[in-house]
Length: 169
Ligand code: NI
Image (cartoon, rainbow, N blue to C red; front, side):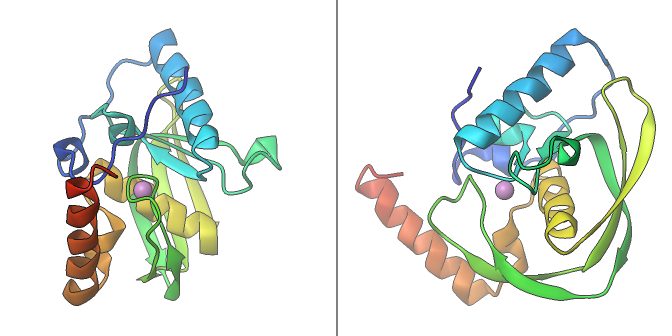
């Protein structure tokens, strides 16, 4: 099932999501639907609050279907190590048609649970590091625009307000 993507302005994007405690078939189905919804929206990462579900679940595929082994499911993820610095253009499915350069760690290690509840660690560089940080941020109620200057952020917000008024958001 393809879920519509929740956009900036919806309060579900601003609050910390709830920890997952039950690892069952329903959770597996939800992550399948999240991959489907992410690919349909042409994204490489999606967090559950972006489909209106405030639970600590994220899916990532930085290869966008190229490599099935690159599919990553993160349940209750936590960033446990960050290294270096790297600035690159970044966007978000919940803030469509906007992009900004965001400075983030270059190498990142996340600790998360898999669909069976088993803990694992994953280290990523560059785009994967960025995706791990971006999606974990979502689960803490944080969007990438919180990492850019207030001036640029206000400009984006002003443009979005105009789009909302015009019924185009
Ligand atoms: Ni996002």
